[in-house]
Length: 260
Image (cartoon, rainbow, N blue to C red; front, side, top):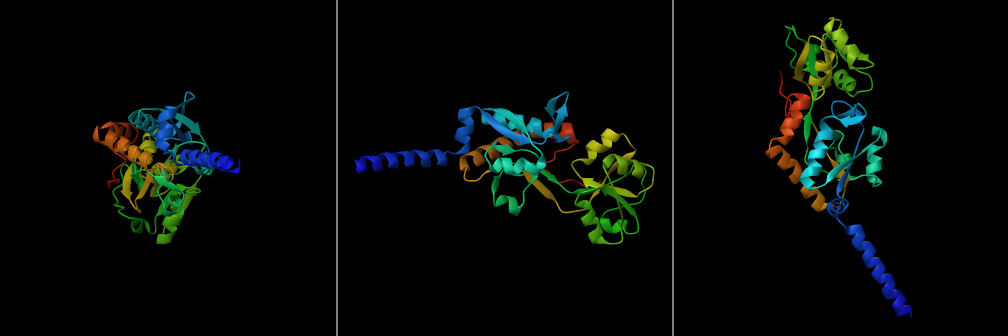
């Protein structure tokens, strides 16, 4: 009797271990959907328009899911909780400009990078002075958003009069009026916000280290990782990625920004 119980327990344990070892790709294929988390409040990457999700990463997620032979199923989450939700298994991936860092790689696996960006200057369209680096702004006024890491980057240079603002609209307005000499933001956002504000401004030079973003997912899913990277590579090879990227950013964001 005890032997029978042991065999049953061993059998159940074997089933449990098999289930635990199932690759995420098998789960996604069986379900028929790729569960994607994003903020939904981060234009032009992902946001709501007429109560529907829109943006670069929304279109990218749908294209990736199609390459995997499934449909994208979206969940919105605040940034502060989005990676914790992934760790808890609430969704399969996060497609929300997640920087690939050594610390995050301790917890998650990542796809190959799909965006490469850097801090970049914004200047007036008629600006004659050449600002190739933050050193060129010593003794000048630089505007940027409160709560960003750009203030630390600028202050580390020294000699720059750093002005912080509640948001991009405020410092871009001051830049257009000549109250500051330049502004600083993410290179991927600049074409969009310049276009949206319709102010006489233009992108300037990238002035910091390159930052790569990828798609995080649970570790120990080699089949899923290979399939996701293949789907991303296929989108780049057939021109779909460049088409989506150019629609939202006027360039291919998988390539490093180019100085203006």
